[in-house]
Length: 211
Image 1: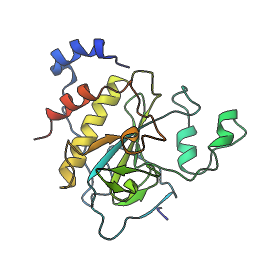
Image 2 (image 1 turned 90 degrees about the horizontal axis):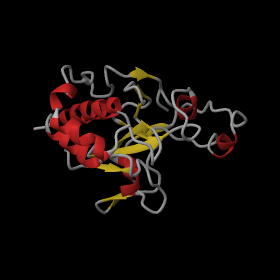
Image 3 (image 1 turned 180 degrees about the vertical axis):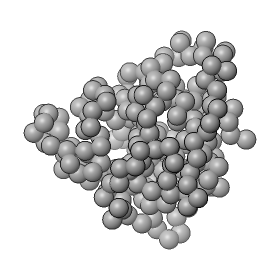
């Protein structure tokens, strides 16, 4: 146990990258386990990675609880097994799940860390990437607060670029090419982060900070 931007709007943003420059990139602690700028909220829903498993994939998810509602404590509660199934009809179907992610990036850009990076978070479920099953074994899960059809915020893109760059610097097997959506690794089950997530914009921003 372990202790909103649509593509048409992005054209102007990409033409003016200075307004979204990252002045102080986020950093990991010396152990490589924790993001220093994140609020730490340990989840019990994790375990050790297999001994031979490297960290070579970042998986981007989308989540909101209840769907389409933002800023509340419900995601924290879900990942710490404290979600009240009676608080909302939707919660009856998910409150029993033992799930987690390494990170959550809220609409404001706040980052919450639930699982140390070298531990295995339970975020991917049945999954496969590049012929390798069980993506939890070798991936880092990053949740974006949102829904598939609603644009993610600039603050989320800013922070996701920072976080991805820091992780790529920290783990040699990671690269900008080893980032996938939940829908990519579990296409029969999952659709997140959905069509609202602009992969071209994210990758363009990331390329500016990753050598």
